[in-house]
Image (tube, rainbow, N blue to C red; front, side):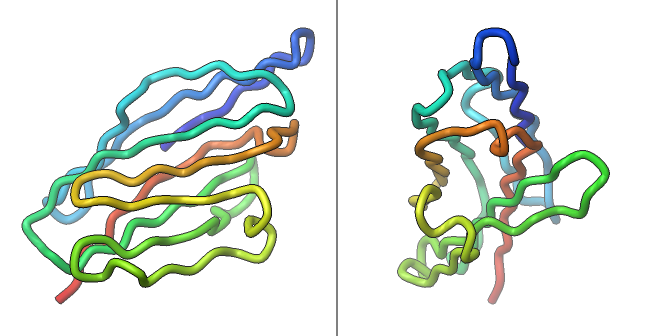
Length: 125
């Protein structure tokens, strides 16, 4: 998961990323903290490991005291080309997925992007 902290005095965003495990597969961050300015773009990256070739990679965000919000998902390996994006995310959020990582890019950052970001892996048959 990734936590974005916004300093209201400098309009800078600080991204904190925490990794997790799912069903024996692993997902981990490549950075622990990233700082960017208001209005700029950031790219978040998750590495993953699984022996399965049927892989879906998901991005979610969570605001305090609210349910997790789906952003998008991307197919990888044998599922490449299979993707979906939430309506709110279509203009400023984009993602790539490769054999062992996924990236989420957010453009034109605003205060509303301050949230905890989660990367998830689903491997299927």
